[in-house]
Length: 221
Image (tube, rainbow, N blue to C red; front, side, top):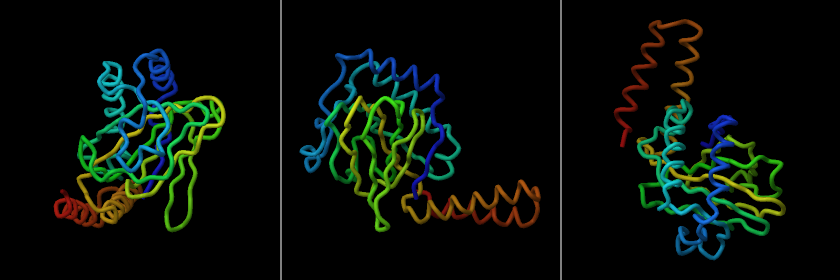
C-alpha cells in the first residue's frame, strides 16, 4: 500500500526548510556516498552532510511532523523513522533503477518516503517512478506533500532536465512487519471510524474495535 500526505508541511514550513538548505552550500556531499554497493553507479545527486548541525535540526523537525501525522500512524504504524536524507539534483542528475536496502543504519526499511520540497515550477523532469506488477506510476508532487510507499518496490528518479529538484527521503520500520497486515488494519480502522461518525459508540463499533486491538496485539513486532 502506498499513500499520499497532502500536505505534510505547510507552505511556511517548506519555504523555511528550503531557504536553510539552499544557504548551506558548503554542507552538501556526493549522494553516492550513502548508496549501497549495487546502487552507487546509478545515483547522481548531492545530499546534505548527515554530520552537520543543520541536518540534525531539519531531520528532527521532519521526523516529528511525520510521527504526528494521523495517516502515518494509521497506515504505517511507525516503530522508527530513520535514515532521513536531504537530496538535491540539478540538470542531468537522478537516481537509476534500484531497490532500497532491507536494513539501513537506523533500522529495517519496511516503508520508504519522499517529501517534495521544491515547487513544481522550479524544475522539470525528476519524476519518482515506482514499478509494480500493475505497471509504472510517476510522481511529481507539489512542495510540502509526501509519498509513502513499500520499500520492496523497484523505483527510480528520472533525470532533471531543468532547474533543481530538492527532496527529503527516509524510511519507516513498522511495528507491523507485513504489508498485508498493515493494509487490513488500516481498512478496519477506517471502517470503525466511519461507523463511529455515523452511529456513535454502539455494539458493532465495540466489536470491531475489539478485533482491531486484538489483531494489533497479535501482529505487533
